[in-house]
Length: 383
Picture 1 (cartoon, rainbow, N blue to C red):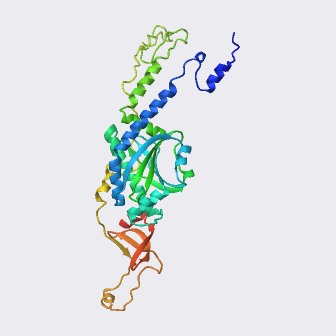
Picture 2: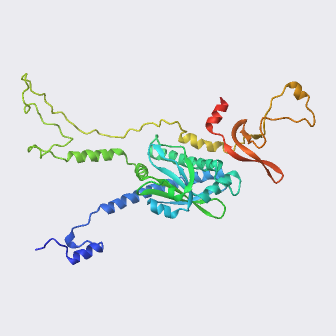
Picture 3: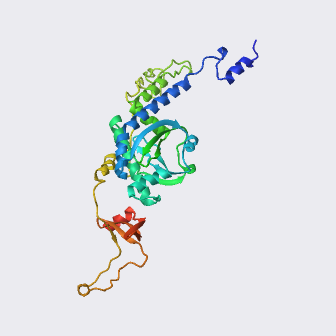
């Protein structure tokens, strides 16, 4: 008779990962989990691949070049493995979904790739990732996300999908805010026409990736609710004083005769009401309270990217009487309201958008942007 200890053969079988005949049949859960993950991966791969032509048009328009995405590969990874693929410094752009499929969503660009994209857009070499350059990257990701939202809406019928306004930062990779656990990662191969292969990573949190993949496959929350109802119905109540098992979908028994008579001699009414589960259970989607451009509005900016606008640089202003203006001649010095060395104003269609300092490029004057005027300041000027 066995004393409960494992034999040497059984120990060897466990160490080798092979099940012995006496240890029982292996559980199918890992294989099922792997199959589900592969199904999700393929759904995401097919969906993101279908957007490559539109995404290529977006980046070509922003950079005014032949830039294009040449392919991508989707897989599941974790933080440690992801950091192993990244250079030391990266540009991380957060574009989380806040409705429809709420959860973590971000893009990661190597610093060199972000500079190359901003340099093409600004027609400037050796560009620094200042506020102006970062706004170009944010606009690219906004276009990228807008294209995805439009495609997701068309494919899933979910019209509540929205994302936050993209916001990028240039940071060491060790402080990049990646999702926890196993998450989806799409690695894009980007050709900027400089003879190099650039890479961009799109990261979807585990919950977002799973929800999107299942929605693309036509699944909804209803089957899960039905499964929960079935599970509840199988839970008997035979342990309660020998009472018969009762499912959630069954009618309650007539309890009028079994209840004690109350003081007034009135028994409790018949409580044999059916408690069937609802036919269809869906989650409630609450609208986003923060104002933001819709996916359609975000995508429409591409229609005006080739429209010219008048940009002027204003050295300063002053006010003079008509008699003083009429008295001006050659050699007259006009004193302006700006101090020497103070930034000049940069205006587009006579609206202040930035400030800068005057520089000389070869034999021409130019302006180096030193400050972008905040939206609040622009609004106050309009008022």
